[in-house]
Length: 248
Image (cartoon, rainbow, N blue to C red; front, side, top):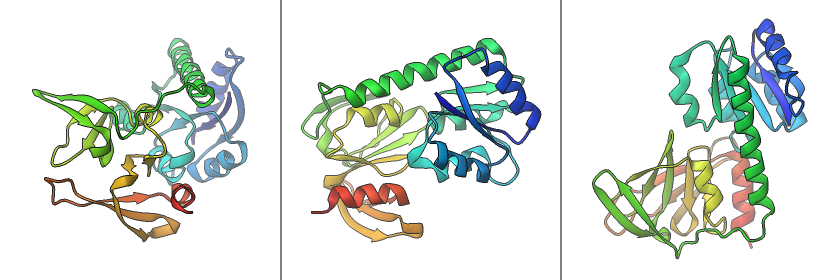
């Protein structure tokens, strides 16, 4: 796995490289001391895995992921601060390692990465993968309330950390699932990953406007019982895919 280490502390980078020598499948192709260096190296190497510090001079680790949001490899956060753990998993990190890094915890994290990459590769190459389409109905339970809803009625899926909020009619229940895992199940002809936090149902797009930095702003129609219109930003790179998908 092509790997980049991003940490402003040289000693921390060196220690992590030393620990990673025990894992022959990990190939450290580059290291960066800040987010700006990292962006260039990610473009150049297209890594499978990032070991990413959170607090760095200039842009922090979360801001870096927002910049590269639609080409993010697997991420393991490395930090001396435990208060960022919940936010880290909102960014779909596979693991969160506290410094000084323990070798056994590092092994657990790498095992997670290997399993996730194998799972993704299988999904991408298996011709028998059956997507959930807009005609499929799914059971949703949130607290004491339950729904049996057709996916075509769900106009928006919104990441809420380890949960996903479904928007249909005037309902907004949450399910315990990551947006990434949900994306792999949904039919890409009907459901589009707009950005890090949102998947939109293309049938509910009412209006499209140019947005900052080459992105797009889409307005979704409200449901039968909802007067609220959601406005969702499509990132610059996802906007290119969106235009290709929606053009003749």
